[in-house]
Length: 344
Length: 173
Image (cartoon, rainbow over all chains, first blue to last red; front, side):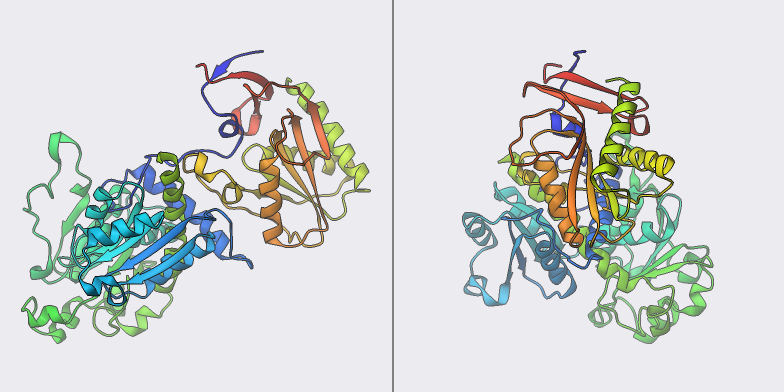
């Protein structure tokens, strides 16, 4: 019996369903399809199982070099990437802007070219300016770039870990009501989470002081259809400044970190007023669904955007988000490090 | 091979597994995803019917242990699940086709990371030859000589809705 097929033999026999979209970089979630998000979350679930073993080490990325390049302070994101890379057996090198040639005025492009010349496979970058990771990705031919937070623009790995945590506990994402409360305007976490939750079919309500809400009239942003009549994933996203109204029937509430400098710049009159109207606490959670869950990207201002009791209570997924962050970053590093070699 | 031939091969394999190991005590069947899993479950079911003992069946995903990540596109990884601790057990790796031996090598590494088994044995429904590593199967359903240009496609009811084994020509479609 002879027939013809195009598949490679091992692909045929193995466990090989490719992740859709041959992605080279992870810059934001706006260019992820729903299928790619699902595949990435599924891979993260397998990675999570590795994290729960006695021996937390697999050889998948042996011989790969991952560089974390942080121009801004960070604990959990940087350490999470480092742990993810090390569990996958990659070599991880950490570089912070304050202790490098960047202090001597080296440009981002030259730093990137230098790292590329040293044979780095993946650069994980956090930068205060929106678009810095995109700039690196455009200019480096042989390196995969992961955005670990750029200005107020995007934080895609945080968005994916939020999706993973939510999906794990809600049993799915489509149709669920997600409230994101706080300084949405300046939050890269919110921006990426909105894309992710909206693409996964959740209903997203943004809440907070009207001065800290994004402008729904921004060109190219909101509405029922985007360019070319393609259905806009953001059609399921709306704004409700009153948290008491927004939280009604919510399945998940995500509180954002409030930076106190926003008050000095006049975005809201006083911390006390912010707490009174937008703090997520037990009374407010009582208006949500009985099993509603709480997330926070950290670091938390306990007693400001979220009450201490709730943050450490049964409904809080905050510590689990951190664990899942390692699993998500393992999944992304695995997916990308394979792709770099394929394209070279 | 058609479904009857597969059934007869599985029957012989489970007898050989029991004979070699003096019964089912301490056995753990580890199916290598995807099609090693239904094969392992069939072996376990036959052992249960013949000997009235339940042999645990694990599922092994070996993508994180492959040595050829750079040669293939990104794969979906699924969890490895073992119903019992591998330590002190006789772990029987179960796969549909034995070819280069690289999958078995990866599976041995994966098992070793979970604990220290008493011994590891390898089972394949089809041994098609062309080994690239010093690895052989302990139990084989059928030896099928092939050319490297060819593919061996195994399908199971559980995964593909049909039981058969075919030799296919590679890459001309």
